[in-house]
Image (tube, rainbow, N blue to C red; front, side, top):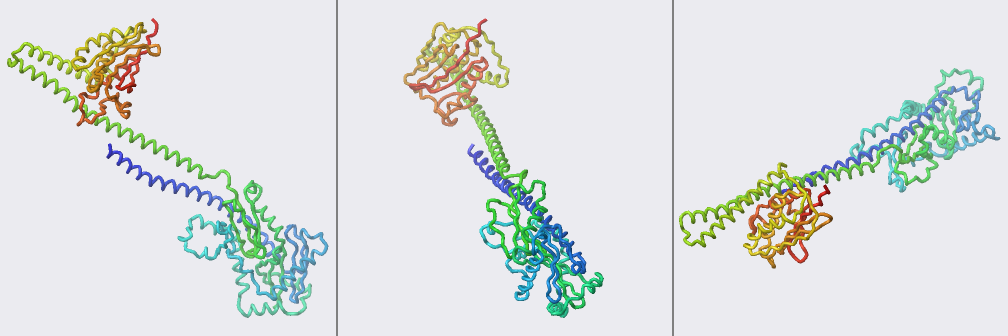
Length: 596
């Protein structure tokens, strides 16, 4: 059994490793799935915003050159404050206004903001502040460092090796922002137009700075659109609350800047509506916007899913942050923990059941082997005695009649012992096969108890014991099989004599009393009793509390197993316990027979 325990321990440890790895991978998969799904939702929201900006940009870039000279009507979009044109002489002209059209001085406000930007542009190097490390047109997840105020350098993140960043196939999908791709070709044109060659750049700058009078309105209207190159627009943040979209148009070495002024807050409201839509996502998401001149406010640290997107050119001065609450309908680690607990419980119960089955089988096989050895010994002992006494009597070696009578008694006793042993083996075999039939009759058990006592008294007294029989009067009738009851009492008394040879007093008590409306027959010795660890197993077949090699008592381990089998066949119940005051007591309880 020790080897079996070690084997099961090694097997359990070997099983624990793969199970722990499986659980770890399952938890990782659930976490990754939640992250990927929230990431996909965030990418979809930002993609819709990029698409909306692309349509806006396309509409503004398709405006003809002479439309600004003729005057542009007010836009229906609430975030468009107005359009403007900067002539070569520096004159700023504003056209229309959207939500501010009814306010006095709306055009003057547009002209003021544009003039403020151009004056700052002449004294400060052009370009956006270098405070944004995230690349345009990208989305990043705001992690723990960013929530604590630690800056994340997206450019380094993009340059890092894929193995170091843990880039997966899903990460590659982040580059498939369709709104960004729609403007990729436009950005290439911007670079080609702004950097054709050094000479062209100088000519353009000189034309814009020249203090010459603007071309007549009639002359501008007479120039065909096909003869004027309309470059893509660029974007600049004015004061943190306004965004300029403009293009530089060259006509006969004269430069004109034409564009539109946007209100950032109203643009953010419009983008939020475009991105979140009306399908219920807004209930689980919150979007905020910021510019390079006006950083975003603090993040909602309680949400595990926060994403930041920097819009592609020419809106790269604008960024958005999306806070997603855990979306309903997604898997949770709670299910994994529940499945892990179920798996652990199932595996534990399976291993326990397997160990129990193997240990019982091995123990049963070991007891059967011991039983064979015990039966061989028990059969050999009486046969040897019978043969010895018989040969002595046959050869006339016993001259005394007293001795011959003693030898005859020994031969008879050993023959009876051999018969009981063989009967026990046969009875147990029939019980195991289910072929042992009992004939139950209703009657009093007292006559059977007295009969067994008289048959066993010579044997008990010959072993130096006293047999005391106590039978209560007027006991109710019970259902039992006479032969089975006699064999049960015979085995119980013989077992008591066998294991109480050192008892004091050397007495066997056989009692018959009423119990719970029926009758209880008890057999008690006054020996050392049975150790507590063996009490629950003494009725198992072939079980012996002593080691087979060092045991001092005779027996095969079948007596009490046979008792239990016969008692249960009679519909009764047998129990064993250490008695108060010393000794061991076995009780057979019969139920009262139903009235006929």
